Every structure is written in C-alpha cells, then in structure tokens.
Length: 225
Length: 225
DNA sequence: TCCGACCTTGACGCAACCCTGACGCGCGGG
DNA sequence: CCCGCGCGTCAGGGTTGCGTCAAGGTCGGA
Image (cartoon, rainbow over the protein chains, first blue to last red):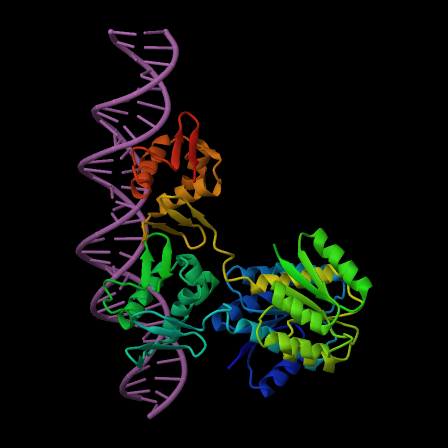
C-alpha cells in the first residue's frame, strides 16, 4: 500500500486530504509543522510527501532541503503563493511538483499518482537483482534463496534495499543509517554491524566470508553481484 | 549535455523555447505535430520532452501513450486548457507534469530541471578515470587493477581521490595534507611520503618507478593518466 | 495475560589501520 | 669533500573499527 505524508497547518485541508486519500486506499500520516514533518518522514518512510509551504515554524523550502539530505521521496508542494520565484525556489530545492491553492482534488490526486508511478521502479532498471547466492525483488519486496523465500524483518529489508538500490556503489555508514533509521541516527554504527551480520547469516553461503555484502572498513558497505 | 525535445504547432512558442533552452546549454530538437514528435523521440532519445497537447494531427494524450509504450523519458505537458479533466487524463496517461499557458519561463525551466534531476540515476553518473595500469571509479569508490578490485584504506582512498579529482594538475603538499587530514595538518609531509608509497605499491606496475602517481620534488604530487 | 518477534544496547576479542621514528639514498651547495 | 635537505622505505605500537554474542525492552497478537 502506498503511504502518504500530508503536511499542512490548516486542519481543514489536512482533514479533506486525509479523507480523500484514505477513501482511495492510501495509508496516510499527517504533520502540522516542519519539525513534525521531518520526524514523521524519518519514522514512517512515506512513499510521497504532500507539503504546504506556509508552515508556522519553518520555511517550507528549508523542510525540502532537510528532507533531501537523506531521502529521495517525491515531494509535492502545496502553496497559496502564485509568484514564480517561490515555485522556482521550491523546485530547485528538490521538490517534484508545485500546486497552487485553491487546487482541484482531482488534479492533486492525478499529480500524486504521477509522482508515485515515477518513483516505483526507482532505477529505470531491473526490479529484480540476482546473485549466485540469492535473488532480490525490489518491487515485490521479496528475497529468494535456494528456491525458497527468505523471511526478512522490516529493518533488515530496508538495509538490504538501500544497498541493492545503490547498484554496486559504496554507501557510507552515515548515509545508510540515515536512510534506514532516520536522520538523527547518523552515528549509531553498531546498528549496522548487528544488522549486516543478520543479513549475511540469512543470505550468504558462508556468512563469515561475505561475497555480496561487503564491508569497506572505515568507509561503508557495498552490495556486489 | 541534456537533450530536450520541444513539440508545439505554434512556431512562436517553439522559437521562444528553443532560444531560452539553447542559452542555458541544453541541446534542443523540435517537432510540430504528433507524428514528428514520435519520430524525433525515437531518433534522438531526448532526456526530456516538452509537449503541447493541442497538436494538429493527433490527440496529445495519444502521443503520451504511444511514447510510454517504449520510453520512460520525462514528459512535461504544455496546454491552454485549464480544465482539470484534461490534466488528469494527461497525467494518468504517463505525463510527468502539466503547465498551463500562458506560463512563466522561469517556472517552466525550474520544472524541467526537476524532471531531469529525478530521472538521473541515484548518484549522478559514474565518473571513471582509466590508466593503463588501473581504473578509478570515483562514484562507486572502487579501484580496479588487472581485473580485480584493489582494497584501499580510507586514507589511501582520500589521497587518491584528491589527486584524481585535480585532473592531472599539480597539487601542493600543503593542500593535499589539508584535504586529506584536515586543516591543521599542513606540515606533516611524512604522512604523504608514507601513503604515497602505499598507493604506489598497490597501484603501480613498478612501484619504485611510478608512472601515474608522480612526485614533483619540492612542490607536490600529480596524477597522470 | 502471556508469548513471540523484533529492535536496542553493551561487552569483548581480534584484525586492520594510522601514526611515528629511524635509516638510506641522491642531489646541490658550502 | 662534507653537510643538509627532501624523498622513499621499513617496522613496531597504540588505537580504532568490525564481527559476534547475549541480555533487556517494546509492541502486537493469541
């Protein structure tokens, strides 16, 4: 199910959006200021964010920038300002779309579908990645090994997904931690050690000699076919 | 360079767009009807398409569908219709964004940047530098030699990266030290000697006769292809 | 209420890495 | 001829980072 985060300080708008979205089988969280938005994004990992620019505590563009430091989630901006300067700022900060109030609900939903659709097969490439030892299906969120499904916990899956999506590139530990646990966990490197060990135990033929989930000491981790 | 395909039957709009885009270093093709658009898209493989919905020969939404049969190129729709039904149709057919005429050029360019940015692979293109002896992939943080990966320690990598990024130019020792070890290490030149030796041992065919990691006595070091 | 799955946290041993000092060599100048 | 300087080489020791294990805590479902 697609998870949406709605951020707006006007309760009426939040309510309207929440109702419309839930009716269409979206899972919806909401926040009413910038701090809450960042917290919710980190905790819930939404598939798309609908963000009002006029928040009480933070400049909306700042929220976009902070989000973009660790996440590529699509951001759909909602704003009362029609001025093109505002739009340009928001889009260049990392927003994906910009809708001015008052907006038609039909149009908003269509733009939301477009944003989600784009993001799904995230790398324009394979949704299924195979190694000699196991197979990862990013779309179905499944891992196969020796013809059977491997059960992964949510955290294990997030970690594996972040590594596989990087496509062989090295991923720094700080970046991994932020992607999986959220922006405030940039230093808890022992989480990584524990969960990498777990993944290797479940996926590698010889967990003590990993061939696909590689450690680069002092730098980060890498997924290798 | 980013390639844009502009599709509109109004020559004035095409001209205005082409001029604005060329001035910003985009490579621009254009078409004036649906058939031409599909032909141009197939022949030139643009990175983004700007598509007017009101074409003489085809329904614009149909063009979107036909394009989507084989391409995931971002499509930015331009239209005089404000009706939300039109927008929904176009977006659901596979368009990425919808701008109504008259539009501000600033805004259009910002939306175009957003569309292109999204389509880029996760971490910017791989920057690979090759020599006869070894290969450095700056994005993946990987070094290849004789068909195998070379393991570098974090300090070794930083040093190599600083040299390679300089692109053949000489890098002073003080600058190198500051880049790799931090601003307060401007004088510990023996670090450089030790780690340069390590790098040469791992990368050069004949470490005592370096051909790519060159010392310029009294001045600094240089990376040479 | 109890149970199980999952996440967090701390401790420990080991390997690898970074720093450091010492030495040798070639070169140019005193 | 000797000396000083800059660079390359080597080896040892302190420190860091990683893998591993196990125990406590939280949450949801039976």
